[in-house]
Structures are given as structure tokens and as C-alpha cells.
Image 1 (cartoon, rainbow, N blue to C red):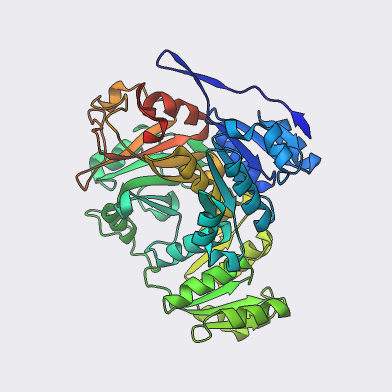
Image 2: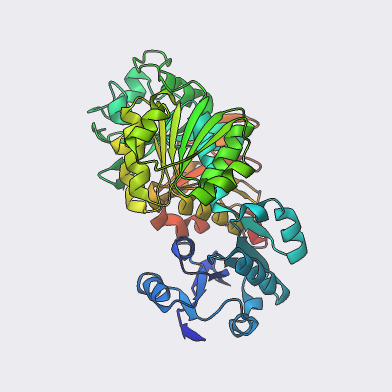
Length: 487
């Protein structure tokens, strides 16, 4: 076993020295790297285990973590790591069986909690049994989570990025300024104070040239900006529909529920998505190039609502024969980002109302939607959000990574131990990159001002740049004597 050491961080909170949380990640691929990057930003001690020295070198070159060149499946490796001193083990190798066994071994050896990535549809049918029998605390399935996210996009009334919080009462969406008449070349304060186009809503961030800007009232919106807006879902709906008083935003044409959907790619995401949509009565055409895979899909999927087509999904003649132009939505979920993007754009040009592409490269996710693709979803970001929510514990309800991982939106439930309780937000001294976007109290959504306060039992949604995530502990860590998982 080869170790590359990294110092364990120690945080000083409320005058008391406190050892940081310890997390070990088995598997140094894309997901392992993403999780490690997110956790290091939170001052968590991270160890990464893998047998591939090149992957570990890439991680150690960019992140302050402990890297261990060894097989995580070996009990001796876990013992030498002193696994019983770790709070969480996350197994994200390419093998479901390895992940299940490593997670189970870690729990048996004293690790407090374990998470396993399990992707096989056969395993997905018996997740509860696996968790119970093997003693695993949490199982994640990136492909299933991505398929569910795509399905939610198809069923939403809008065709761009959106995320819901507070049990669906609060939404965060992104909007192109060019699609909002009267917004370009105006200050945000002018939109609020004169035309009232943002009544009940708050712009929490602006994406400009793939960089994040935290705006204030004097910020001038530009034609090519993408704005992130938070607010009560009804107000978001009014903005997107163009029915807000005094607004001349045109009615979106994409509000009808998709009835005909074409999916390019019959891998795990394509399978889960077709299964989900067909169960909702949506007719699906699923194009897959591998004949053997087509046979499997034909046997496993609902034949009443799903037509499996053996062919090359990049063949324009095939798409025309299958009447692409009549589809309500087109989803590209092959293993090739470029193929997904190109065919989604072609579907858009053919008149398909809603097009979505799965992308794995963060740099692609930041620019694809500017090209005309309605949504670009990254399974790694979706999965990392799921894991962060689990690790942070009881009072963290949901986490959503934004803008290729440059920022996140997190929903908390306030306990009476939080140091911010009862204090006006303007007096908290929040960093520039941290914004409390909404407070939900007794079922009512409040877009806060500087005089607003957070009370015990409130739900509140926080936007935060990743560079500021460690600072969240200073504001949202329970006072001394409260358990850490009460956040």
C-alpha cells in the first residue's frame, strides 16, 4: 500500500478546537474526483483509495487529500487506514459488486457510515435488501438519478435548468436575458422598482462568459447573460408564462406535456428513462446501435409504449424515417458528449420543442445551453449533490450543484441551536458569495430583505459559491453542545 499524505484540517469554531470530519473515497474516477473536490472545499479530511497510480497522481496534483495506492477491497488496506476513525466511506469504483463489498467491510470494521454506487438495473430492483443485508447506509445510482432528473425536466412547464426546494414551493431556474424583453441593458434595481418584473423573485447569480457574478441592485444585465432566479414556484411560473402584470414576455410554446419522446442511446440512462416515461403513458422511441442491447431492451421495457429501434442515431435518414419532427422531446444520452449535443441541436432545428443532452465534461455543461439545447445534465454533478446531502446529515434537506460545480444551492431546516437564529440577515456578515435566497415559514415563502430573520423550524435556501462553502460552518454550524448532524 502506497500513501501520499495530506495534513488533516482542524477547524476553530466558537473558540474551541474541533477535529474535522474524515471521509474515505474508494475509486478515483470522475465521480471520486468530483466528490473529493467538493468535500475538500468544506475542510473535510479526505482519503482516496485506488489501484491506478495515474488517477491518484491527477488527484494529488490538484487536491489536498491523502491518496492511497491499494485495493480498497482488501481488508488489510482498510485496517491500515484505520477505517474505524472515519465518519464515511464512499465506494465509487466501476464495479457494483466491489462497491457493495467495500461498503459492507468498512461498516463491519467500524466506519460510522458507508455509501455505495450501484448502477446495474438488476441490483436496482433489490436495493432495500442489499442495504439491509450488507449493512450499507446509502446507495446511489447515477444513471437512475439522471433519468429521474431528465423526466422531471420533461414534465416541468419550462425547458431550461430548474431545481425545486421546500417540497416544491421554491424554485431556482436559469433564464437567458436575451429571452426576456426589457431586461438587457438595465440595472436590477430598475427592474424591481419600476417595471416590477421581478416582484417576489430574487436574482442570486449571473453567468457571464462562463464566470459567476454575484449581483447587487446596480448590476447591469447584458444581452448574453444567464441569470439564476429564486422564488416561489407560482411567481416563477408567472415569469416564464409572461403573465406577470406589466410584462411583455411571450408565452412559452413548450408548456404542453410531452407525449412523444425520442431517446438516443440505450445504455443504463436510456433504459431507466424509457422505463420511467412509458410508465407515465408517454410513447417512447429508443434508438440503440448495438443489436444485442436492443434485444435486452425489447425484453425488459414496456412494448405498448416503447419502440426499440436498432440503428445509428446520428443517421439523418433514420431520424427522418422515424418522424423526428413530430416528437415533443429529444434526449441524447449516449456515451459521447459531442454526439448528444450535435443530435440535440439537430432535433431543435427540426422543430422538436424540448431537447436535452447528457454531458460529462463540466466545460460542455457551461456552454451547451447557450447553443440552444434546453438542458445539459451532468450525471457526476447530480450524484455528487446526492452524496453531499447525505454526508451533511439531518438538517440539510437538499443540495444542488450549479454552473459546472462553481456554486451550490442548499436547503436547510433551522434548529434552535444555530447561531444565526433571530438575527437580521444584514447583521450576519455573510460573505459576498453567500446569499440566503428564500425563507419558508408556516408554509409561506419569504424573499428576505436585510431586516428578515430566521426562526427555529424555518426552511431556508442558501446560494453559495464553492469557494465560500467552508465559511458556511461559521454561520450554520450548531452552537457548542448541539450534535453536528442537527444542521
